[in-house]
Length: 542
Image (tube, rainbow, N blue to C red; front, side):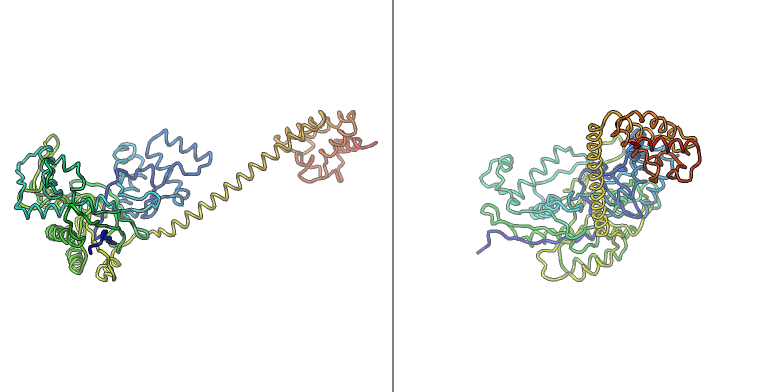
């Protein structure tokens, strides 16, 4: 009996850089660079002192690059608190340092510099701080080969009328018709609108795609994304970069870096294939595209023959090839003569038109001027319910370059920093409470004092803020002597209070706290000191 649910563990290994956009960028105001690592952080989480807050405010009132320079100068605080880390190419490090360290360049081209320091982020899990592959991205890549095969098997029907310029409306109608014919069971349904309203008639209703979650610490890297024409034009002798972008991508060569659960439910309406059958269709579609594209790239010198040979060896020994994420438009369309409708964006003020193939390649690079040993975007190997290690794949992955930073070490430092910050905060709070309690006790004490005793305390506070000088020239000493003279008429309790407060025998306390040279009155012959000693002693003489 066929089980109600067929559940499969699916593993994904990136074979080339994979970028799946998330609508966010790394910007100069939320990252710093140290060595060959980008550290992303949330500015509001920084613990700044008063001076640092003032400096940041001044930077905010200036420009964006000034803000970035402030953060860059405080790397020691930012790095342990960073929420996300990514490796970067040496080429971008050089470009970054040039733009940041050249004040004249910044002032003349501030906006341009800012744009060059923006980096497209790949999809990520905010709490884990790791890249992932959304199930929706996989579903799209999973569906296209099936539609393409069924279209070809059906003799190219529905017929797609090819024109140099095709409207978006026309393309939408074509897409609707293809989905109607190949993904929906339309028996007893009158229209496509009715089909759409009856989700049960969608073949993929019973196929559940989960997100591909990262296993362990999945690494990403900031690559240059270079655009090259597929053919030489206008008398060109070499292929030159047309457009340069900066893009975070999942680093290739991470063995079974992602896993997902794919389930196929027993469907009473639609006849479903097994997961392996669907992926076999995928593999046939993508393998043909991969070989054609790679052979052309190798012939042009963009990609090494060794890379092509290695990947062919891997996919021939098992697994299913698939292409995910941004770029690679040729692998996202139906095959067959005059079927694909790829938007071609001509020069400025010219209308977009559609044709079978893209006119350019988008390739990942370590520098803006690189023209060989480049890599395409988006290729990955899918394995379903593996029971043993894939030795060929594993060996290749182990030989691929990895990030230099140690994520575990950074996270450990971050936790240590948090603990230290918590300790400092606890100490600061304890100090605040102690000072608060001391102030309460001081106020309570003042309330219990007589008018004369409060006068003494007021004088001590006043003297504490004045310059300390030798008693022979000190105005504090003179004031203290005058206070002793006035106090001779006070009551006994007030006189004894003053006597204790003006004790010259205690080092750095009493009177020695405010004036120099008394030394407890020992061996002093100065007239003023002798008089002072007599006046003080009279306070306690009955």
